[in-house]
Length: 165
Image: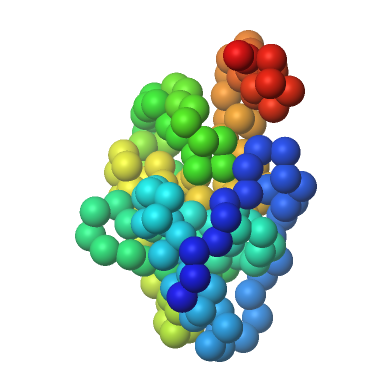
């Protein structure tokens, strides 16, 4: 297992749709293990393969009951609304109020190729939606209300240029 550097805002891999995983083999299982180790090291509650520079539809998460993997996940159902301060390892040390459905149900494969389904409200529902967003090339910033997004982008640009000091 290995800990990978997490790609951050501005990296093109974070803005493109990840590729489906074909055969689930030892290399995919190693990727899952590396994602889990990297997620815990960060620390975070979820991580998608594009966040470590691998454009594959693989995510891992731990919303409190141990690490889980989802390969080629599909969002099946969402409902409700929940406004919550959300952060992202790819936009470190930033949190913004994001409204998402409070419930999500997803289906995918585990690291052994078994069909798995996860459903959850609030934190788990949010983590599932957030990580699937990464597979679609959608960053947290894309979920912000327009005015807030403009300010966030301005702040990130200034920080990148060293103007925030």
